[in-house]
Amino acid sequence: MPINIVVCVKDTPESLGVSIDPKTRHVSHEGVKTAINPFDEYAVEEALRIKEKLAGTTTTVLSVGPAQAEGALREALSRGVESAVLVSGTEFAGSDTYATSRVLAAAIRKLDETRPVHLVLFGKSSNDGSSGIVGAQVAAWLGWPSAIAVKKVDSVTDSSVAVVRLLEDGMDTVKLGLPACVSTIKEINEPRLPSLKGKLAAKKAPIQKLGLADLGLKAEEVGSAGSLARIASETTPPARPAGMTVEGKTAAEKAAKLVDILIERKLI
Image (tube, rainbow, N blue to C red; front, side, top):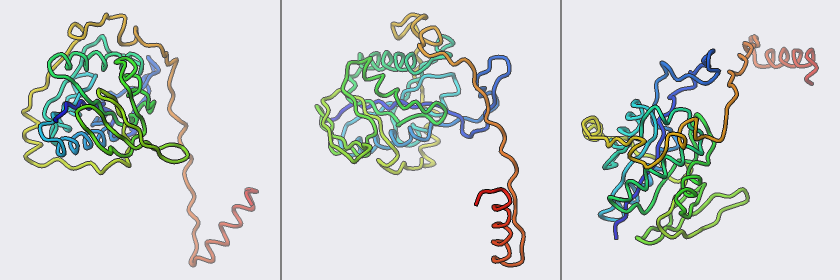
């Protein structure tokens, strides 16, 4: 039987060209181009593969963020996801993983009212925060079973999902009753590229908007007010010193000069 899959994605900086705001002492994304979090692409792809195996399965992509996060949602739509939902509002600014996961869980409950949600997929982490715990936190808020570091989805039915998890000393296979949350790693698949037809359709696709009032949450439960973690300040790492080029006519001459430099610096 078909299932309903929700994939949680994040809009993140496309490059490391971010700066620190001197007033707030926090990372500023102003003027930085953003895109769908690379690790979330694997979760999107896995949802599409499950949909291809289970006829009638539906997929929705969900994100919490400012208006520009629509770009990440449309990228997922261009690859074949049917619908997109954006939770946005000034109240959500400054959320840590605790507050973010609470909002995502509330949004999933909201979607579940219209159509039961069976499986929620996540990427392993974001390339800007790298906490890697949002998937498990959402599962905790929902009271659902979860699995992280999943490198393979073995089987999916309308009542369970069997997955292979990557562990420090090997792998194991676990079976979760649905509904459940699963966090994937990049070894799980190779994300497809969007087609031209998909890109054009995604540009015109409607995106459902949800705000604080839609989620049944209070202002003090979200954003910086509802966060447990407080980042005192952030700093950029010191610039790396310029490298050195060892000149020489032959490889042997270059090697000899390199050895002399290492000896001079007491590295050998």
